[in-house]
Length: 604
Image (cartoon, rainbow, N blue to C red):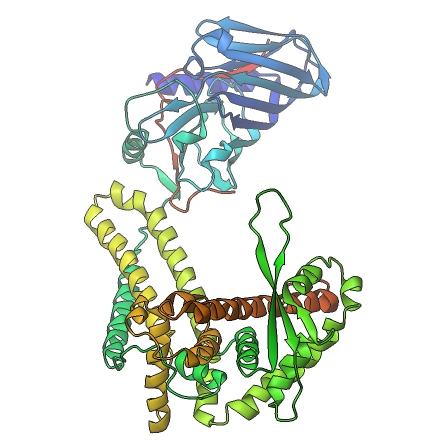
């Protein structure tokens, strides 16, 4: 009955009021220190001039009058005199100038320490439009922006108003709008956001979400934004099962792979490219170049001269420079050997690999790089070397196919890797975003199951990729035998147990190094041949340095070629909102707005 009388009284007041509210807009920005910065723009139509206008703020939105700091008050774009006073238990911002007709009033003020830190969220509530405005508002809109630290995190909000309007989220802002707001209708909002987004000592030992949830049930909140059940398990569990079955199939296949004994003795005289293709299903150009140089040195075609390099600074350790000298040319060279000789000795029959690399690496621009002879040499080498290897060396179709299939396999593996990473990202993001929902709804065991299925998917995917990238076994009987022999040699080079099987003679050390270089393990050869005599060991160390330097030299030449051709050393280039588990609602009452005091305003 009392409420009905209040409504009737407000109706008669509105009828007798000599002003109207055409537009009411308020913008509230939550500060990182817990303050609330507010800008209000109100458009009034006055039938007469008043002594003053006022905007009252309810007592629940401040503790002391000093908590409200007025920055400016403007009417029709001009600053006017104003005062901040208490009228009973409410604060009033009073402006001292009014006009007949349109009055655009702009208020800019702060309310200190408005944010409260609960155990689970930071919370801020504020009444935008008080029930004590005696007239209707034709248009109302509010924009509340939460701190940047709340971006990507879960947020919940509730709008309280007798009349229902629209509310939606735009970035970090919650926008509210109503039309024809009746007098006596308050509009307020409460917002829950990440606790780490603000710093304040205004703490409350309670759950803000539990309070909001209870109010929604009491007042029959209409959902504006509500997190749907994530159903993450429907994605995680099938992916885990599929990856587990695939890993099981790979495991059974891997058990059929023959166990090959290790040896350090090269089992034959096959071409390095053939050995690498059989054992690794691939060959690296720079490794084949280095292996060819090692072989030419071993055959006496190229000679080595070692020189000491003077230390550049202080106690820097001196190191040897290795000079390669082309002793003789022969018409019996294989075409790919001629290509390597032409590449290495492009500037003469005597080459200091270290000095040339340093010189190439100092070239910084395309024009200077194009002046070097090595540019043409690399271009010619690139055009013929790979073709020579395929036609002259990889004559066996199956061996050539193994190498080609490995390239295709790498493409598939890369695609699988990208897909797996994407799926993993989606699973982790989905699980992370869903965590709050599962915890709030008591589904901890399901959350644990999802977590372990994600871990299982990762483990199984890694194992599948590990087995899939292993070299493919040849099917031809002769190639199978070669594969077993050379794989034993390859495994022996990589294993420290090679010391248990020393070479019986120093004569074979050159071939060991040649094949080790082609297989990419030349830097391990020295330690595996430690039982040879001092002279041979020293020779091996020199040859090993040549192999490594040769690969680095080739890399340097390709880099300077790319710089001269493409202008860079890398070569040709190939062609804030909230979490999805935020929620929002619209309540026709509650939230500490109904039953309490209410602000408003008017003219007098």
